Length: 257
View 1 (tube, one colour):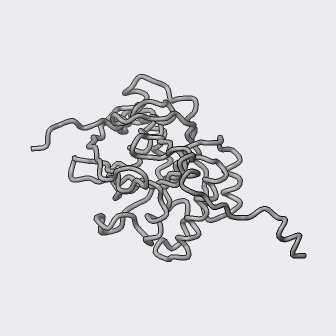
View 2 (cartoon, one colour):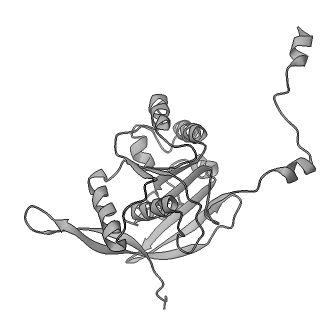
View 3 (cartoon, one colour):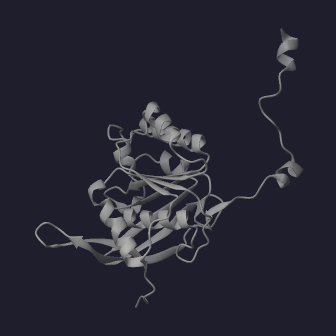
């Protein structure tokens, strides 16, 4: 019995310094902001413009075009729009009208209900996702409506589910989340969430001034920030002949006095 046990390959592998040198370097999805694999978070208060920013980011990744001047590695993207589904088409239309472009073929949307803590939902969702893709889950709250975000056990379940989805796709899972009543306290809910993230982007707003900043980058530099505006675009007319409008993201290069 002991001989059979001893003949099995070891479960754990020990690496020395030379082995570490042979490991591949970190591959950035968005240089200095998001890694190509892992779990990331984008968070901010309601009305900060985070979902508009996420859509803009998703399109840049699918296009493989720079985002706020940062190099982007092209990857297929799936955006699970679980909040504000009715207005999501208008956001897309606003982007297309402003830039005069169609969306990239490698960008897809999922508008059906999805529960992250439900194993069957994770398995079914993973089956339709391209390998190595970037999955935006907007928002974490809508993906876990019955979970207590402040409870360590519930949050642990959500984190493990996100890791499971990431492992099945071998890409990046981006959780879009809210801040609490005290926005300066960061991500809403149990502190285990921010600890589990490989990267995090914080979105904030002061009146009409908005910005995003790198709140966490495990193998990069945090604190870098960029200002942006939400610009209004008319996307059509309703049945009463009134304008239908939405917004798109534009980098804000104005000088702060």
